[in-house]
Image 1 (cartoon, rainbow, N blue to C red):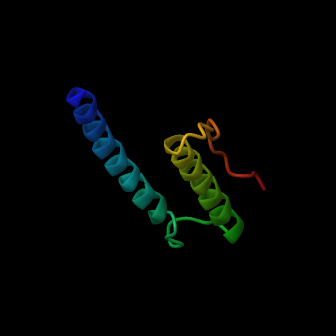
Image 2: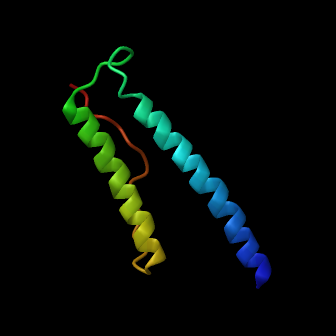
Length: 76
């Protein structure tokens, strides 16, 4: 059973660190000198991220629901 624990720890650390890095990269999109976006775009991004966090959290609490397969910004 300790093998399952070690595997969980190894995967959790790698995946959480990768997610943190990717979230930081999303934050870089806030640079208005390099990118053009509006408040609605930012709201869509963070709504999608929060939805996925909520779905992941619910899987740990036994609910088991999953989030969306992919994210797309609304085309204006």
